[in-house]
Image (cartoon, rainbow, N blue to C red; front, side, top):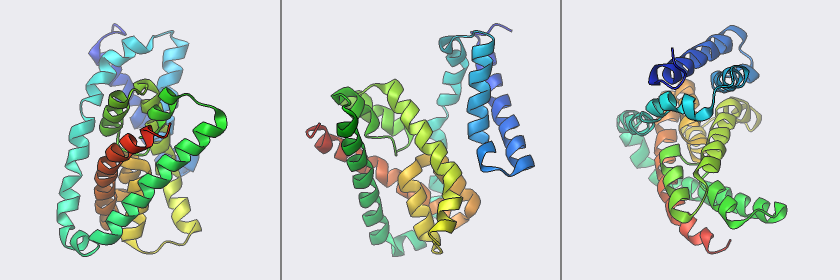
Length: 227
């Protein structure tokens, strides 16, 4: 099977994630999160067999095509909880605004601290929103899309892995607050974890992810002038 074929990239990605899920279910360890295991396995295969990322991405790009539809499918769970969301619209909106402001402010402060240039700052600003929106924001504002993809992926994995522990540490009991916090900080990967925690958490997280994407697009224009 040629490594620059669509079949190779898709097969490697699906197989790596399947093994990751098996490891996660078997061990129950946080470090064995399916996403982390899948990423490590894909990188290991590419390095060991000296396969270029461009060859792998021929198939990986096909999987990327499903990102936007998969994000849109979250609307089903949101619609199922529309009465609950209508009741809590103000806390959700305020929480999303606070999450976007905190994310952007932290990027600006740390970028100044470490002396990053403008392109890097603009690439990192949308790190907490879902990938299709984040890449559009970075590309439109003059950021580096590859850096944005890496930042969004790392942020999502961290949210997916750490969300249950953070909920226990801070003793968050309200399912709306749980979903809001996860969706505002770790987009689709975090929302996947929120849906595992509960239906309400998943619905609110999906809504927060969408709202934060819209708010971040506007915030990027404002914060871009501060860089």
